[in-house]
Amino acid sequence: MNELAVQMAEPETMIPADSEPFGRFENVQMVFERSRQDPLVAIEDISFDIDAGQLISLLGPSGCGKTTFLRIAAGLTRATGGVVRIRGVDVTKPQDDFGFVFQSPNLMPWRNVLDNVLFPMEVKRRRNAAAKARAAELLELVGLAGFEKVRPAELSGGMQQRAALCRALIHEPSLLLMDEPFGALDELTRMEMNDLLLEIRQVTGATTLFVTHSISEAIYLSDRVVVFSKRPANIADLLEIDMVYPRSAELRYVPEFTEFEHRASIALGISR
Amino acid sequence: MKAVYLTRSLYPIAGTAAIIVLWQLYVDLFEVSVVVLPSPFKVLLAMIEEWRLLLSESWVTLLECVYGFALAVGLGIPIAVAVTSSRILNLTFYPILIASQSVPKVAIAPIILVWFGLGIESKLVIAFLVAFFPIVVDTATGLRATPPGLLDLARSLKTSPLQTFIKIRFPAALPFIFSGAKVAVTLAVIGAVIGEFVGADSGLGNLLLTANSQLDGALAWAALVWLSVLGILLFALVVIAERLLMPWGIEGSQH
Image (cartoon, rainbow over the protein chains, first blue to last red):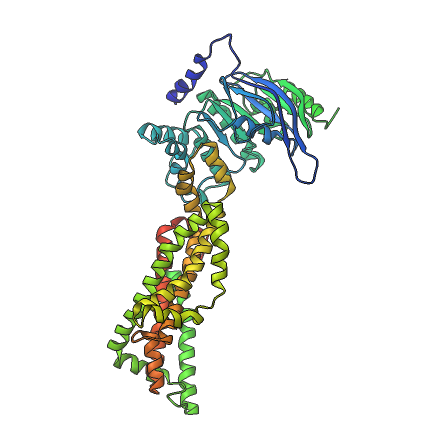
C-alpha cells in the first residue's frame, strides 16, 4: 500500500509551484450537429481549474451534459470549442495516464477478476510481476482479495464495480475519471463505496473527476463541487468544500454539510 | 449436477421407448408390410446383421459432413471477419452472399456432381455450401454485437484495432459463432445426404436409397437410424466444443 502512495506522489513533485494548475478547462463548448434539426448545444461554456490530488465532483441533473464533459476531459470526445489542458497536455484523445470508471462495470465476462483488472497493463504490454503485485494490492484494498479467479457473472453489482475501480487504477493514472460509478447501486452499498473511494484517494492520492447526480455524494466526497446548470450547460455554482479529510459517515449530519447541500440545491434550481 | 442430467434424460428415453412399443404394436396389429414400415424388431435385426456395412457407410458420410463443416468454419469465419472489418468488402460481398442463399442447394446438387464426380468430394462440397451461410452470418452478427461499453473501455485505453479484435470483439462473438456452428453442423449432414441421394457409390444416404429400391425396408430404416445418430453425435461434439471454449457461458444457459 505504501508503494501505491509513493508512486502516485511523484507526478505532483514534477510540477513546478508557479506554473499551470494540474488541469484547466477553458471555455469548453460542445455542440452536436443534428440532421434536419437545429444543432444541440450540450455545453455552452465551462471553465474551471483542478489542483493535483483534488477530488472534484461534477453535479447536475440527468441530461445536463456532465457525462459529455467528463468524456471530453478523458479525450473520448472532442469538444467543439475551448481548451482542455491536463498536466500541460492539450487533451483531444485518450491519454496513457488516465483511468476511466464507467457507469456500468464493463467487465469482460470471459475473463476472471484478475485478468480483467490486468487488462490495461496487457494493452500497454506491461503485464509483469510488478503489475500482478499491484493488482493484488488493489483487490485487497477494495475488499476483493480471494476473488481473483472468480468470473464477473458470479459477483454482485457492487463487487463488479469495485473490480472496475481496480482496473482503472492498475496503471497508476494521474487522473481518475468516474462517470456516476455508484449510480446503479443501492444507497447502502453506495455509501460503502463512497468511503472506499475516499480511502483509495488517501492511499493513492489520485486526482479525481467525479460525475454524480447525488448532492450528498458530491459534497461528501469532494474538495470542490462544480454544479452544472440544465442544458445548455454552464457552471451554476462552484462550491469549495472546506471540510477536512479523512471524512466519515457522521459528517453527513453536521450543519455545515446541510448548508452545502442547500447551496447546491439552490444552484440546481430545486430550492430557494 | 450429474444426477439431475441422469434423471432428466429418463424422460426422453421413456418417451422414445413408448414410441417404439407403439410402433411395434402398430406393425403387428395391422400386419404392415416390411417395405412400408418395418417393425422396430426387424430394424434392430438388420442393424445387428449388417453392422459392418452400416459402419463403413457411416464412416463415408461422417467424413463428408466433417470435412464440409470444417471447410465452412475455416472459410466462413475469416470471411465474416473480413466483411465486418471493411466497409468495401461488406458492401461488395454481403449482398452476393445473401443472394447465393436463395439458390436451393438441392437444385445445384446435380451440377456439383458433374463438377466433382461421384466420390466423397461432391458431397463434401454440398455439405460445405449449406453449412457456410449460417457460420458467416452468425459470426458477422456476433462481431457487430460487441457490447459498446467494452469498446468504450478499449478506446479509453488506446487499444489498437488488432488488440481490440483479439481481446474483445472475437471472444464477445463466440456465443454467436457457436450458435451458427450448431445450425451449420445439422445442415452439413442434410447436405451430405442430399448429395448421396443425387448420385453416389457409398454413404448412408446411398445405402438408404439402395436398400429401398431392393425393397429391404429394415435395412433402409437401419441406415436412417444410423444417420440420425450421426447427426446427434456431430451436434453433441459442437456442444462439447462450446463448453470447452466458452466456460463462462455455462452460467447463462441451462440445457
